[in-house]
Length: 223
Image 1 (cartoon, rainbow, N blue to C red):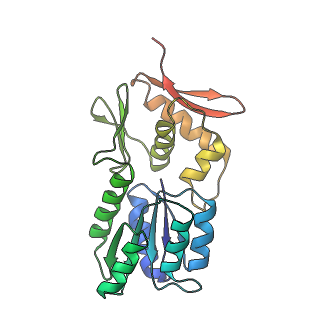
Image 2 (tube, rainbow, N blue to C red):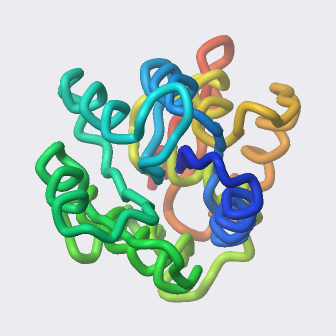
Image 3 (cartoon, one colour):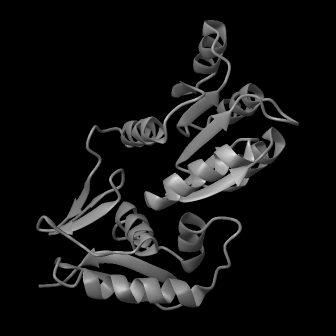
């Protein structure tokens, strides 16, 4: 899952990016409101972390434009503005949560997990097919309760395939979901991740099918 951070404080943004990347997310960062608005129009994100005091375009205007496009993307506002009216304005425009600076990274991660659970429409949005389960909030995969040793990118590939179970997912769609803007991408890398994933879920009753020229699909292993 990809997260967009829109924050003009480079040191804070880097700390957030590092923490969320370590938690298994693909994280993009922009340092102004215009860049955030453009990114939100073109890429598929699972969460927006939005500062209010952004250059070029205020964070509230970024949020206003997002909701005008009828985009229900979960939004967590970060702000040094402590006045109640600022918080009310953000929530009234459609923010899902509001965190005042300074804050602890542990609290931010907890709020991110809560928003992602809410965004999935369930308190426990675990995806399960046959013996394989994936928790998109905890970023863990298990077979019959036993944790699978998956890398961050393998987990991301699994998440996309499980969310589109039985449907074809192209390499381009996988690249969009698991890589950030500044990462070098090759389709060969996707093939490697799929190959490793196929071996690791071999005991789950599922398989990753290759549909040549089209992509991949997670499906039931025929008995």
